[in-house]
Image 1 (cartoon, rainbow, N blue to C red):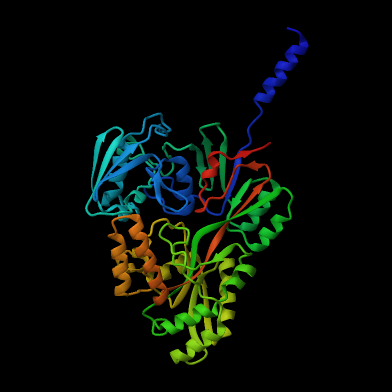
Image 2 (spheres, rainbow, N blue to C red):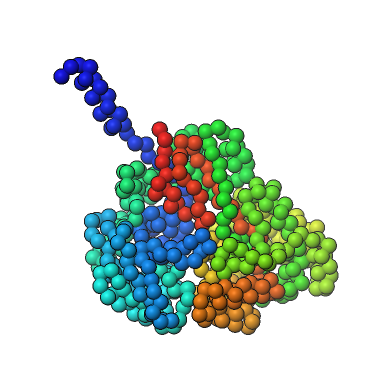
Length: 490
């Protein structure tokens, strides 16, 4: 063979074998569990979507849509699911069948296993496998929302029986599979289509994550970036910033049994005294939009598109306080976490309330203490956000009088409204999504009359990537699904 030909062949072989760069994703929090039967934190849930297939997903209006299976509602309490032909090979080479689906959900329903997802599935009375491709869910009562509850990743029945440690060694049928997770804050997945390695690195501090992005040590960071950091990153030619409207609902909550905050006039006065637009512009860097509904955004199939928000009106706030007959300054306590952005928001709210005669006692705590107080009802007022809400049954969990924390619910302010209870129950008994939407919208109008929360804003999702990253786009719920196809150009 001629030397020149040998040189050409060697050059081509070298080019073909050029190492592929890992696509590196900087996380503020590492995943806790890669077992979808137990995972509840946002990072774990988003990564599990890449590792496992689920029966059902959601469309852009958050209506249930087929993922791994289609379904028929044979009777009000009988659903038949038929598995698709694609996406049915587990990472260990086994084929996914209806028996795996049955085993996954029966494990969750077993109270001895203490799955946090069991509560939303208790209406399942029986699961019957018809054949390898078909199974039936028999319910104890009718539920128009039922398909949207089947969003847990499916696992192999043989490994479930063997009590395989899915939390650290996931075996699903998703587009990505685990490569290595020997360090808790450093996770490697590999994409099955092309072998691209996706690397997740926990970098808790936003400033350090941003510096790593600029230095090329990570390629993608998503959310948890202050306006100052975003402004700085925008000035870097090697970095691309993208925003998308999100669905995470921020709110100001009241203890509805407290002698002061149980007064509607006081709650309304606080609502009119908070200048949301000012906070959004100067504290959140225009990365949010005012909320004009409760929990669900106006684009949700059960959301209310026509509700007004509380426009900033300090004159009206003062009049309401006078109507309530409270002594000025009215003293209220407010709890929040010691996150820097949350403290800044709380400081601005404190200043705004002082202008109408409210003296807010601002108390900040580490996350564990703060959240523990909220769950136990130890507060007069506080602020938090509901993240990733997809199903309107959240209203029962948050506002029904039976859903107090002692019963495992999230009615932490102890709202007790027979009319709201009745509307929640009527919506749950609707015969179709269309009828349900009408009732859920009526329910949201009633929330404005009771005002257990002040709707604040829906925070945007913010993405910062290296310019070399192509094809990664923000999802409305902040999922990481674009990693299935995103590329890094060398």
